[in-house]
Image (cartoon, rainbow, N blue to C red; front, side, top):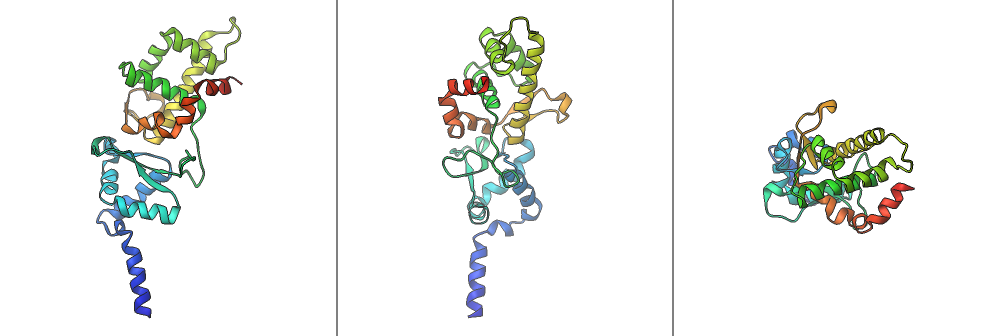
Amino acid sequence: MADENNQEKINELKKYDFLIDIDAKELFAELDYFLRQGQHIQYKHDKQTLLFNFIYKNEDSLKLYYKDFLRVNLLSNKTTDKFNKYYYLGFDAGNRGMVRKGNYEYLDKKHIIIGLVFWELYELDLNYPESLSKFYEILFNHDIYKDSFLRLFANINNETKDMYEDIDIIKNEIEKAFGKFEELGWIVFENSNKSEKNIFSVMPSFKRLTEEQYKNDIENYEILCKEILK
């Protein structure tokens, strides 16, 4: 009977065979930390390549581990292109949170709008503003974007207000949004110094903003704006 019980335990552990991977001791703790913090792990992210490869070759057993022990899903986007693939921890339908110290955390609605406007410029208009300074330049030299952002974020109702002060408020909100995108692994700044963050690279996972996760917010864009103006 004891032998049977031991064999059952051995068979159970075999499900999580990523633990016997030669790189597990070096990589798994770091990988687990980043995933729980809500980061998206992707091959294109230079600092995550080793972590991505570890998931890529142990995907099935890692999925079982997270489902059995944390009751969350290790997910990836639907592509066979390794260069554009990414992994993240997700929840069942209806939840759009991310694991962070055991709690759900959502993107601020203002940051969703900032992300959507950036993506429109980046993907649809082909202006590719891969720096905050370029993003500001496009926004504040485009009347529709500028007026919309002033109304939404600075909440201008009085023509006598100082517009430059309001623009600083908007820039501050954009910096917060891109700081959050960086935490998620959606972008990577060239310089890690907070005061010098400007040029960045867009990661494949940024597309999650335009897909299922925030589908309801995108479809109800006008309602979203009204909520911000309350």
